[in-house]
Image (cartoon, rainbow over all chains, first blue to last red; front, side, top):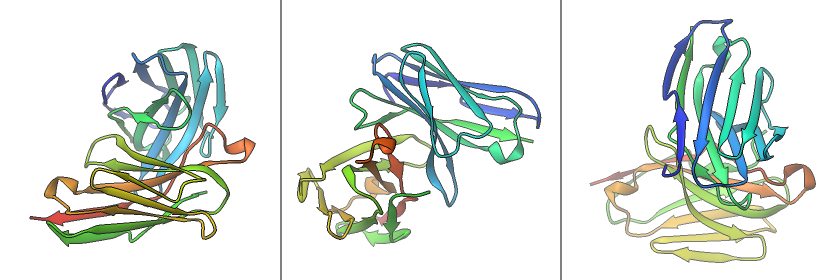
Length: 111
Length: 114
């Protein structure tokens, strides 16, 4: 987990509220990713970034938006949280788009 | 959709035994990687094998890749209780749309009994 932090680590929120998760890296890696991990589904890519202000959708992007205004920060926003977005969210970084290094995760519960 | 599928879903062995996990995938790939996840933690990269490689070793890990069968295996030799974790394969597609992305399988949960 060295060089990657996620905040908050745990969050409980109510349906319909906006939520922003932050991923911060100190490695100056170009690529950053947001995944969600759910039982029975493994890890699924939500969005990724290949540079400052350069982002693209992943497999499960509906209901999520991202922003990357600085190399070190990648924000994931749930505009209006739903119970189906209860999950564990992982950020990952990569220098070469090959090997990825993962953060410690954020547990989100939407009531 | 999942690209990689691990088999078995769960595996329980005695300490000192070897553990073998398999991964099958669907499309052409640039590389295949294996990651480990301890309970409640993030994933940790173990090993990467490229599409033009057939076998790779790292310590007690041995990975094979058969691109004709679209499958890979991860062998952990002389297992230890500390190897207890979930293991995931991940593939980087060789198609333009899949570049820069990894697609993960659902994982194999390995329990090593002391």
